[in-house]
Amino acid sequence: MLDNSYTALHSSDKLDPHSRELKMIDPQNMSILIADDMETMCSLIRNMLKDLGYGKRFHFAPNGLLALNVLKKNPIDLAIVDWNMPIMNGTELLASIREDSALKEIPVIMITGEANKEIVAEAAEADINAFILKPLTAKSLESKISSIIESVNNPPPMVLHLNKARKHEEDGNIDLAIKEAKLAMKTDLLSSKPVRELGYFYFKKNDLETAERWLIKAAAMNEIDVFSLHYLGEIYLKRNDIEKASVFFDKAMKISPRHISRGINFGKILIQKNMIDKGLKVFDKAIRISKDPLSTSEEIAEFCIQNEMHEYAIKVMDFILKKMPTRYDIMLKLGIANENLGRPQKALNYFIGAGKIDKDNIEIKMHIAKNYLEIGQRVRAEEVLKSALEIDPGNQKAKDLLRF
Image 1: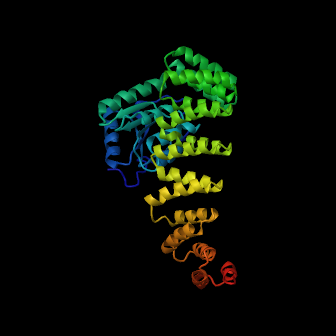
Image 2: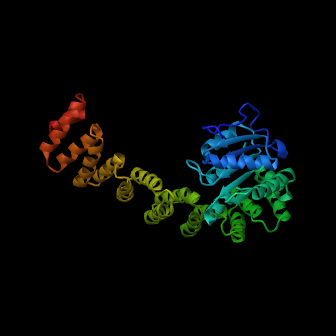
Image 3: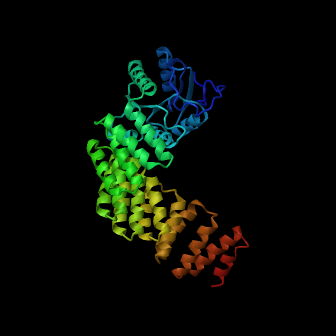
């Protein structure tokens, strides 16, 4: 039975967590991370691995965030992760691994009960090593692991060239990265990966015309290559071709929700370019297709408030409040937005609602009093101000308003 905290079974093994670079994998002595929020699934996978003769050290994590902590503290030869985990799911964990220079070469197997396009796209963008669809079997596990070990211990030429290309990029030598990407492409003419990497390197070099050509080819070879779609959007944005940029960012968002944040950034750029209507349409679409529309709405609302786009902020925050009617902080922001638009009665409705939940909040009381004064209800304003002074007798703002 696993311990309740999902700690590593062999916590006494203190090796350099980053020493695995360029190391061959020894099947019997592998250090394996199993990330799944179901303890029974972790036990099942560990038992299968032991029966298959894989692994010596096993580590466990109930979500992607804790899995990432394990990876940073321990030498891991293979990560087996469930896609559907709380806090940080499998594809988010995978992306974090690939973005970390010390971890990015770790092979990852993702287990999922869903084979829809968006999961595949997200994982493919971050270079997944293998997928296993549930129900999990020892045969499927053995097949994927043996293939990964063979690939790691005897990497194909394309992989070797792309690894060299990324190393050159990290060292700031884009020309050598381009050279290696071209060599990688010659070794596997059917793979879109070296094609998109070539486009990306030319983008980094600011040769937008050549980058565009290669990225278009990569996107044609792989219709769910959101990486290429995103950078095509970036190219057209640099050229100020908003229409084309919109097309590619929109495609990326539709394929992979992970790109919603990039779409939101695109909307922010449009608004900063004073293309308000286009930017708001991007925001509408991001909220509509987001897996977490409330968080997406909150991020967009905050941006709109900061940029004094109060009407749209009100629309978005009203949506949040309908779903979460006890969010008094949203009521407060709605009150302030209406206040800024010169709508004291509407502002009052929100402030009073917030005050019913947080009865001793001085800030809310001051807003209520101010708006009562705006609509000429001095007696009610005085009552609120006196109640504020009972809580905070030294509140100078309340004393000043009572003098009006």
